[in-house]
Amino acid sequence: MEQKNQDMTSGSLAKGILFFSIPLMLSNILQVLFNMSDIAVVGHFAGAMALGSVGSTTILVTMFTGFLIGLSGGINVLVALYYGAKNERGVKETVHSAAILSLIIGVILLLIGAGFSRNILELLNTKEELLDGAVLYIRLYFLGLPALALYNFGNAVFSAVGDTKRPLLYLAVAGVLNILLNLFFVVVCQMGAAGVGLASALSQYVSAGLIVRALFISKGIFRLQMKDMKLTKGKARDIVRIGIPAGCQNMIFAIANLFVQVGVNSFSATMVAGNSAAANSDALIYDMMAAFYTGCASFMGQNYGAGKKERILKSYFISLAYSFGVGAFMGLMLVIFGRQFLSLFTNDPEVVKAGMYRISIMGFSYGISAFMDCTIAASRALGKSLVPTVVVIMGSCVFRIIWVYTVFAYFHTIPSLYLLYSFSWSITGLVEILYFIHVYREKVRNGMKAVQA
Image (tube, rainbow, N blue to C red):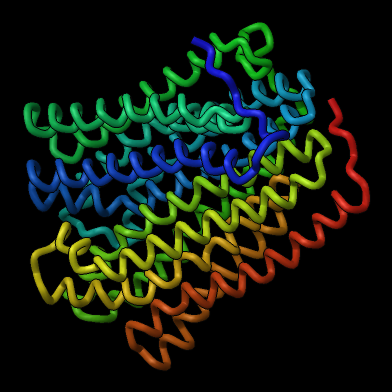
């Protein structure tokens, strides 16, 4: 049955953004929990070697999936822009160009990942005894990249038109299937790490199939039709212009965090274990906040396309308030209940104590990141992606590397390492806000151009 899409250009923004973002937040939480289930199954039923093989690939998974998430952000912005302007041709050309482009990029990433995974893992100094298992797992996992690209494409389109419930449903179905397949391949078939990789790939194709089918049977102007399936040069260029910088930013973030891990590794094995346990909170809180960044881009994009200037800036401020509030509240809860959270991953009191060093600083820092990430989403909603990406790479990536080899090298304490997050987010957030003010004045206050077909 066709679901009613949300009109983002009228009504209460505070209520609209909240109800739009809640299904996205639940989707993100589900994704984190499903990923944790992968680790739990392989850890409990396949042993330490298989667990180590899967864990050794985290950086590769983060880099490639992060790139596809960034690409889908560009699709979301453009579909919202044309949909808000009621530009049927613009929506149609963007959706069909995005479908083809997503599939092509997914296949290219599959070929790169499968072809060079061993070389990359060797560069990351993956332990020899884990290398073969890690390579087999990641190659099977990467078989699902084209499907992941298509799911993210579909999710971006539905989110842009105000429907965040169907992507949540499809993700839930695929996630439950992923857990069942994990248990079947690992416990019944004794496939170890390879079983987890195969289960992930198959479940990705299920979620992609469900969301693409929904786009084909939809009656909205954003529906897919085989007769319109072609790349439109201008629309493909715009998707690349906004999405590729965002994808590269996500990949570089993952690389920059390797240098942070180098700093952590300079301490005891107990501190390293504590950091690993505490870091599980990052994805959970970041992804909850990220729902409001998508809300920000979608609402700003539609209202920009509709020419409703007064709602553009309000969408930004409301999304920023929500994301900051979630980050601050969840961070505080983490500080208060940190020991209970860490006990989910370890029973060693010394590891828990070590993990609390990270939590006591990060818990009060998550909210700060909203000023950076929400403002980046706002700039991209107005069609600016390259400069925000350069700023965030310099402020949150290059800055972190410099911090590790200067401030941290001088003090060499665990707090001096973790504080780099607060400082990098604060500096980057300030510069991003200044740039957004410039873009807003240029595009909105000085005259909004009609969205061209």
